[in-house]
Image 1: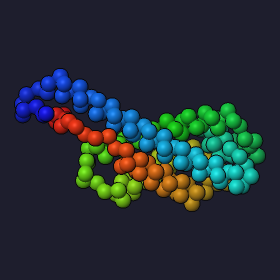
Image 2 (image 1 turned 180 degrees about the vertical axis):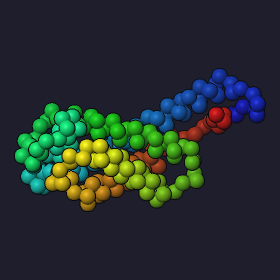
Image 3 (image 1 turned 30 degrees about the vertical axis):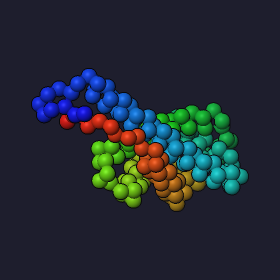
Image 4 (image 1 turned 90 degrees about the vertical axis):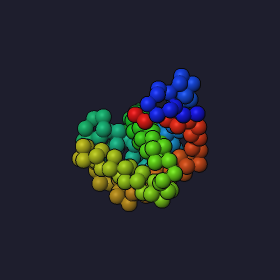
Length: 176
């Protein structure tokens, strides 16, 4: 049920639209958490395979919260890793919400491949912004192939989540 042109939407239409919007935000947040978990597991695997558990989140957290310093001899820190993980997950939640909103705006006009590429580019720019802001990132902490592969994994899992469990649109939203 949509409103007539030039008229205000009814209360029930607005309530349905508000619920649909909330569903999109929750869906995007969940997608962001899926992406954050994917990247975290990827780097946990890399750290484990190299014999340095929690090295990557410790280094990134140290750079983010303390401005860097000597990181090659850093001992893993559960506290710094946990703080970094909260920030990391929060950034991914924001990206997930933005991706869900974009997907909702484009409805069926976007295909999965384009969505993966778009999300990969967004994740790449987000990491690049972080790396440029905190130029003290040591080269041994993160290699470009590891970061690119982690971003591809995150983009694929986030898009898969966004398309698989996409909330239905039951209401035509009035134009802004």
